[in-house]
Amino acid sequence: MIITDILPQKRYKKLRSNIYVDGKFYCGLMNETVVKEKLEIGAEVSESRLAQIQLNSEKLWALDKAFGYISYKMRSKKEVVKYLQDKGFLDVVVEYCLARLSEYKYVDDTNLSELLVSEYSKKGGKFLVKDKLIKKGIDKDLIEQHLSDFEEDDGAAYRLLEKYLKNKITGGAEGKKNFEKAIRHLQSRGFTWDTIKNVLARYRHLLDEGDINDWD
Image 1 (cartoon, rainbow, N blue to C red):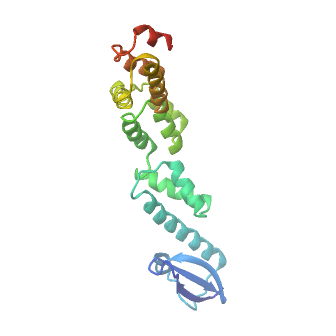
Image 2: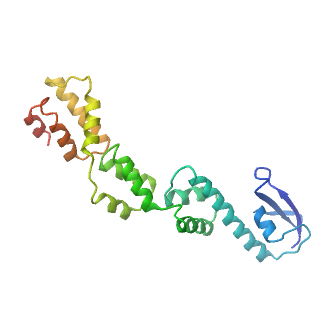
Image 3: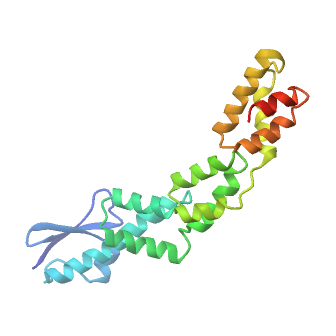
């Protein structure tokens, strides 16, 4: 097999080149790989060597893409894997990238989940936090570990309730309907019923204690 041409790719001129063997396109390689492997027009190369060179180059290319993907936002392992798979990289290449990123803590689900718990616990309850972790692709066991001793922020729930009821009627039949809607609002933000009852109790001057108990 003879390398008959090496041309820069139109989209990634400074990063990649197309390799032609025996007059036909063979593969794209990182320019770094072309230089490192001393590939040049007229050079003879075996199919097995070129295949290994291509694999190594794809690992570098995938790693470069992955760095770009995680550069502006923390990502879970599952997100990185899906991103690279959607780009068409082989499983062996994806596994290589994930191993390198994990080794240097660029992708760390334990750290990510801790940050997410801290962030979303200020915005909602336990169920909201769990939903966010699931959507991020965090491992089920890791989620349970974080939520096993999770304590909801009553203050956050109270502020949401207070904001929701602002300028709304809180007495009589219409008031009760507004409180019922407020309950659904807090539930939509992932708060457990125990937390909701606690913040409702702080409004006992607006509703009879019996009304609150009736909603168990």
